[in-house]
Length: 162
Figure 1 (cartoon, rainbow, N blue to C red):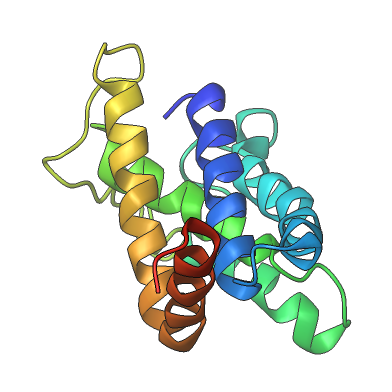
Figure 2: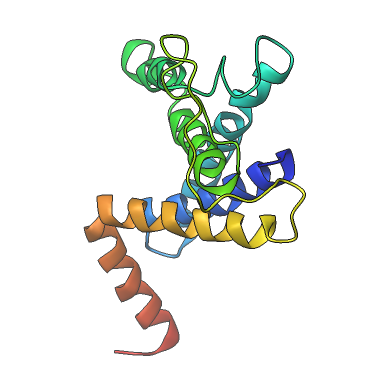
């Protein structure tokens, strides 16, 4: 996927994750979205650093990179939510592009892709980005089902549906 696709994916995913983490639909929800948005966006852009250093879709498009980024909050107490952006980048490249990623690099230089991918300049790149983002949000909702239930309660109350 191109940079624009990764940015839109990160923005939409940040909103969804922020709302799921704080489903009150209040000022706290806006705070939650703000808390996760910059780390997710940075994480979504990070794998493409390998366009300047190393080999694109190999050097930073792998499980080792994801593991290192995911360990930061545990080991150093910072960079929370960056791993979500990195993982979303991988999913978008894996499911949304024809080329895929090399998840086992540097052990195996093998590109793994799904048949759902399109070329980055395709007229279907935008809809595929939205579909992958929707898939990611379904995963987030499955991980936090109680938060999603609370979101429906709050949304119903706001809409006057009891």
